[in-house]
Amino acid sequence: KGRGCQGGHPGRAIMDMKDCDVVIYQAGTDPCRRDPLGGQLSLVQLGERESRVFNDLKNVAWNLAGGYSEFTDRIHLTTLNTAYRSNK
Image 1 (cartoon, one colour):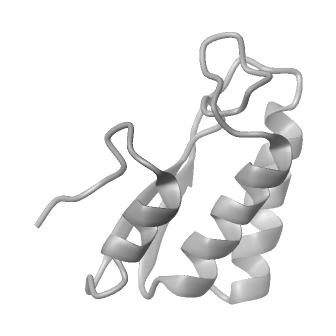
Image 2: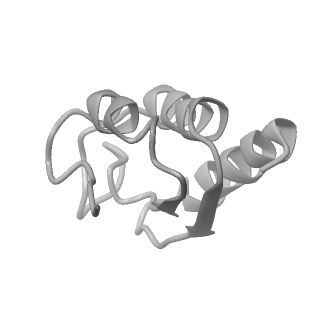
């Protein structure tokens, strides 16, 4: 069953997917407040999002996705480091 945030609260969407056998996660940077085309989450909140995805969910298939901020590389490094630490 396909589920996702769809503009809702990301923490709630993550909890809704806890029982999924597989989660396909596109780790985008567009939600960063500093992204000119995005803008809901702070850098700290994006890091928390990554921690919740990789630590709370099982079997996460993921990829890095765009963004237009000067912080895109920093956000991608956070995603990579968090995934590595969680062994996913």
